[in-house]
Image 1: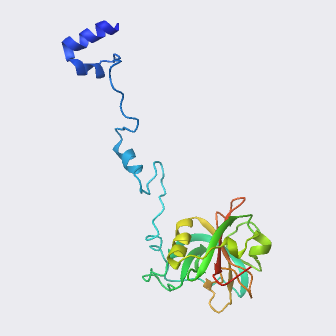
Image 2: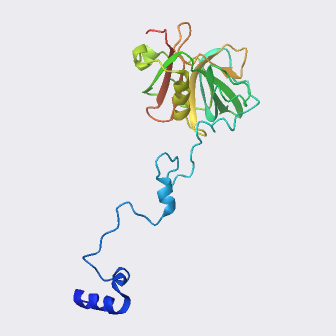
Length: 236
């Protein structure tokens, strides 16, 4: 159909707006805006500040919600040793999450499911410096359990120094941890247990008398990410 015939047909039968529905082209029509969409859900999902991602089935809870599944009973897997705890993260208990069992006013508690038990990994957040580095997992490959006698040293094993870990506020330290760990995902934590409380391990930072501690996210990757911590007065 010619453009002239199309224009006449549209004007005499449906009026000027019929050009939009007749299948005929109209070189004078203004194209729709590039961001226009008829899918209201897509527009909502892409709104600034929204946590939703189109096609994402497992949307992570906010930091305010990551303590919802916190346990009230704990296991007894930790022996007196430096080691690495490999498990699945089930809860992040911040100092403000006092509804959970055994919160800590100056530490974040990571609750891990390990071999059917829930274990507590206690990370300092008050008066610390922190940072992250990608490096191979020290020791054997990730395997659920408590692996004794794994000695991590920030300088020797990761070439990390105190200048790489700037001091932050306790609030920022809590956010640093909470925003990087993922509920339901594997996680490794280098820590120390004195054996007196086999549900808990700590010293998850640079240490003078013990091997160092760290939280490792994506521990099954070729180069997982270590979250490193030091007290502000520590120099190394």
